Image (cartoon, rainbow, N blue to C red; front, side, top):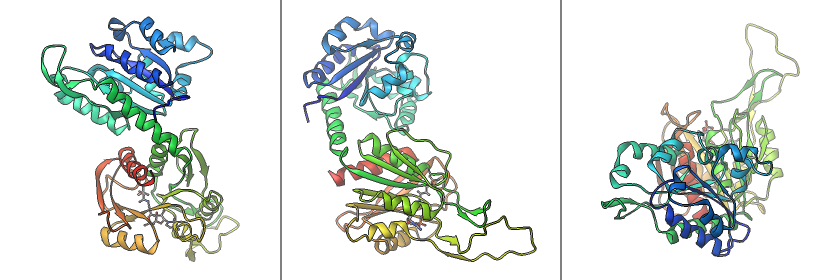
Length: 401
Ligand code: PMT
């Protein structure tokens, strides 16, 4: 794709010698019909002027948090919602630090903190600053948040030194964003359904059987899908989590409700089952609250297997069906048999024997088992669930496109 008509790009320019390269980057986007707004940090104004940017971009330049808040047509939230993508180029070591701390001390950091869009960062700094452990740690945090890096590259620097830390060329930045936007446009027509969270199976009106799923993994997958442009529906069991307004969120409580919501949302192109659906429900739920007694026997019966139903549907089977397998032992063996028995294209095996990953943690460690014998299984090592989701969705995008 090179025609970026209707695509809205928010440029953030930080203070650094390579700020001048942003003018060329903006020119490339403008030449391809993108709509552009720009935020200049205070120090960026030492290197480029609002006037030069407005003349090139024909779009508004913002530099002050308070003047934006006073504007009726666009506050800082509206500005972050307006964009299809945010590019911070150049980003300095200082702004990398500020973003890693969740700072909102100026307009640039506030808009980025409030954003639900993909943020790209094109760093530019001296090689020693780039190699410093603190910069590496801060960038690791930003990668965990789902920000994507473009460059930097190796070369001669304005300070006279040589090494890694030079901002990528405008054309490389343009091409990377252009690829991202073209995949996003293609994905807009692709429907993705995700199940997440636990289910509650009621014994009586106030008591139920449930499990420790927080929904975090499924919500992160839905977020990553939506950021790449997929038309995303999230069917969620009871959780405390919120999700972006551009995701179609359906809240349910029981496995039966999750099943009905899933049926209603077929057909879909991609289905990902990360929910920890209770395998059993109470065969006869008591209408009234059960009184205290010495013993209570409850009979359980099998719940419908939602994944099985979808993956074996005779005319509405999605093109890509992905199940999860939460296992405490024999991870590989159990995951492989679930892959076959549940007729999935992929099973994502989740080792839940470790305390700091899996259920109700911000971290996970998984292995993807593919049905296609050409693909070997792939381990995604211990990291934030947001990063695991990005890696899963990278693979979905490759498969679908
Ligand atoms: O929610 P978090 O706290 O972030 O934790 C994430 C997670 C550990 C719950 C998640 O990563 C995970 O592993 N989900 C699957 C949990 C599970 O119940 O696995 P299972 O092996 O019992 O089920 C296998 C597959 O069948 C799953 O895709 C499940 O969604 C699906 N299933 C199971 C039973 C059922 N009645 N219907 C289903 O669709």
